Length: 250
Ligand code: 6PG
Image 1 (cartoon, helix red, strand yellow):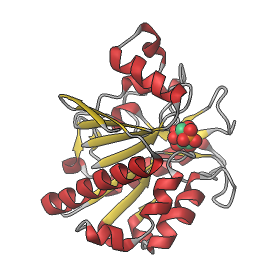
Image 2: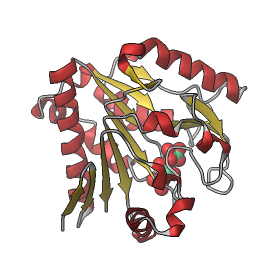
Image 3: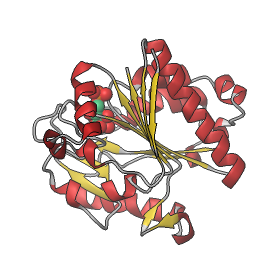
Image 4: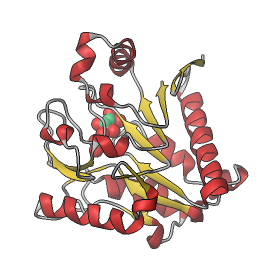
C-alpha cells in the first residue's frame, strides 16, 4: 500500500512490498537525476552505506534502466555520505560495497566517483582531504550558506535514529562549519570509527531520501513526524533539507 502524505516539502511513502520499495526509490532517483541534468547539466548523487540500500543498488546496476528513464549514468557524479574507517577491500567498507554492487556493474568512470578515504590512518586528515576534494568540485556558486548543494542525498537510518554516521549525542552532530568530520559510533555495529558528511551540509540538499525498512525504524520515523519528545534524541529528527525530504518506508 502506498500512502503519500506530503506536507510542504516532507513526503512519507509507505510501501507494501520490497518490490514496491525498490521501484519507487528508483523512480524518484531517476526522476531527480533526469531533472537535474535537464536543468543544470549535472546530477550529484550521495550514496549511503548499510544493508537496507543494497537490494536497491543491485537493481539499479543496469544502465538500461537509467537510460529508459532518460538518465545517462555516465553523467552522474557519485559521492559517499559516510564511510567506515577500513580499507576498501574490508567487508565493512561502504566504498567497497557501492563499487561492488552499483558503480562497477554500471561501468562508472573513475572521474565520476568521489568516495571517502576510509583507510586514512588519521581521521581528521581523512575528513579534511575529502572536504578539500568536495570544495574542488563545489565552487562557491554551487554552494549555499557555506555548504555544497547536492542534488540528492540517499540516507539509511540506524535503529538508534542515526543517519550517515551522525549518531545520537555525538560531537559530529554539533558541527556547524565543516563539510566532513570524523565520527565514533557509541554502540552501533560495526564499531569502527567513521567519516561523515555533516548535518548542515545534508540539509542544503535539493532532495534527501531516507530508506527505512522494518517496524522499529518505522516507529522512529513516526515519532519524528509527530515531533514527540523522544524524537529530540534522534539525529534523523534534525533532517530539514531546504529541498524535499522523502521518508520511503518499507
Ligand atoms: C553506515 C551507513 C549508515 C546506515 C544506517 C542504516 O555506514 O552504516 O551509512 O548510516 O545507513 O546504519 O543501516 P542499515 O540499513 O544497515 O540498517
